[in-house]
Structures are given as structure tokens and as C-alpha cells.
Length: 228
Image 1 (cartoon, rainbow, N blue to C red):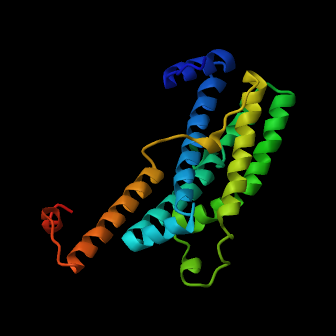
Image 2 (image 1 turned 45 degrees about the horizontal axis):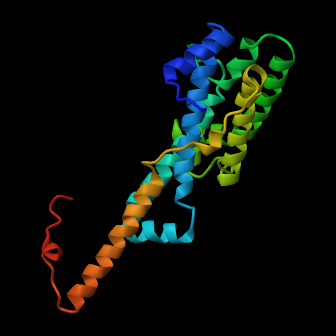
Image 3 (image 1 turned 30 degrees about the vertical axis):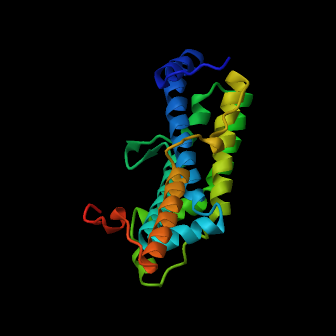
């Protein structure tokens, strides 16, 4: 029977198995990779069906465009951070590149090192966006005189995320003989919930407009929107 474990219990188990240095590092990276996948899954909900895109565009197109751009840029930034050098500008970073040297030298460290190298290649587009657009404003780019930003689309993002999962699950498989389905992050109070309530609201609004067109007015039809 599956049992729920707290974050503290999971971290303690990792430290017990991986040791006082690798354990906390892997736990922190696992949290970051999990959170990245959770947010990416919310982003993809917008494109789950054409009817969903239509619903959001009919409801508040500017707002949902801002949300879309914010989530997209956040995913790019987090991928760039997770593939940063271990040290930059004299500051230490939480990055996948810390895993290979933290692992015992041998097949597992060599496997993870190769997978991290692949991840760096898959994530190059995100690093270009972070370096020249999101974290810094490249003047030449802004004025149209620099090389265009690297192409960045959903497929590029999926490839980068897949590479990250491979890195993490190489460690999971070696020490726990299991893998984590990061891409299947579960939540209930999510974009699906919002989309459901928006559909309910749009249907209610349509019924209200129909009543008003027929000269039928209910008390709730006269309620003010001042609270919005």
C-alpha cells in the first residue's frame, strides 16, 4: 500500500542513502525540476484544445496573454538556471552541473555527466533568451542589429525537459531502482479548474443575456460588478 511521506521525510531518506553532501543537492534539484514541470504543465493547458484558447480569448485576452508570456519566460529562466555553471560571478549555483562531480566516480557519474552534457545542448536556446532578453536587455537585439534570438518553441522546451528528467532518473534508477514521472505532476487547484469555472461563467452569462433579450429579468441579473 502506498504511503504519503512529507517533504522532510523524503529529504531525510535521500540524505541517508546519498550522504550529507549529495543528498541535499539531489533533493534541491528534484524540487526545482518538479516545480518546473508543474508550471510547464499549467502553461500547456492553454493549448489543450482549440475551444480552450477560444474561451480564454473571449474572456480576458490581454490578461491571459500576460499569463502565457510570464509562464513561458519563467520556464526559460528556470531551465537556464538549472544549466548554469556551478559558480558564476563568484556565487555558487544550484545546477545540474553539480551532480556528476558529486557522485562517486564510476559508471554512474560518467552516465550522468553525459546526460548533463546533452541537457546543456538541449537547453542552449533558453540560455540565449535568458542572457540577451530576459535577464539582460541586449542593446543590439533591441535595436535590431544583432543576431536573432535562438528559436524557442514548445518542442524545444519538451526536449530540454526530457533531458533533465533523464539526468534525475539516472540517479533515481541507480540508487532507488525507480524513476519519477516529473511530467505527470498532479494538482487539483490548477488551470483545468480555472477553465472549468470560466466555462460555467460564460454559459451563465449567455443565459443572462438571453433572458434580458426576452425581457425577463431575475434579481441576480441586476447585481453590480463593483467588487471586481
